[in-house]
Amino acid sequence: MSKTKDLTFMAMYLALFYVLDFIANQLQLFKMPQGGTLGLGIIALLLASYHLGWKKGTVVALMSVLLQFMTGQMYIVSPMQFVLEYLLAFGIYGASSLYPNIRGFYPGIVVTNLLRLGFHTIAGAVYWNTEWIPSFTYNAWYMIPTMLVCLVMVPLLHKRIKGMF
Image 1 (spheres, rainbow, N blue to C red):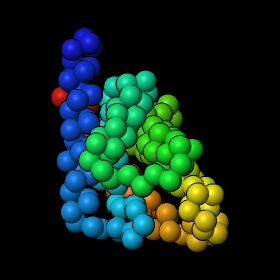
Image 2 (image 1 turned 120 degrees about the vertical axis):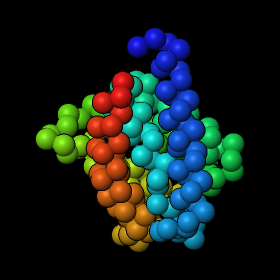
Image 3 (image 1 turned 90 degrees about the vertical axis):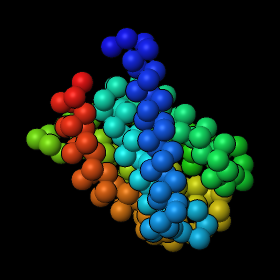
Image 4 (image 1 turned 45 degrees about the vertical axis):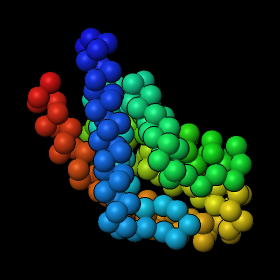
């Protein structure tokens, strides 16, 4: 692929992330009082990884953090909490394509969402002064539905994207 085409796709996935994230925040499905909601925007990050590869997918995922910062959708209490709950938690989605698909099942979706759940659980316990089990429960409330939606939508959309390009 050409550099121009790659940049265009990366911009498209960032725009898709923004629109899906905006929709999820407006619908307030699984919206938690202290932050966290059904992550429809994650679909775009996963598609970027599967379509463009893990390196460009990681760039898109990290750029989504910048978009969240610019739109004021962040809760930051310390630099390390920012790294854990934003850079690592969203950047990990770029690595989803490193896990080979098995007959239409995308294990990278499960692995990256569980890692993100782990990052948020650790941050909840360490930076938000929540016990471990309540932190896990709080974050699982929106992360498990996010993973399930992604497990359905990403394979369907990725199949279509592969057929187009």
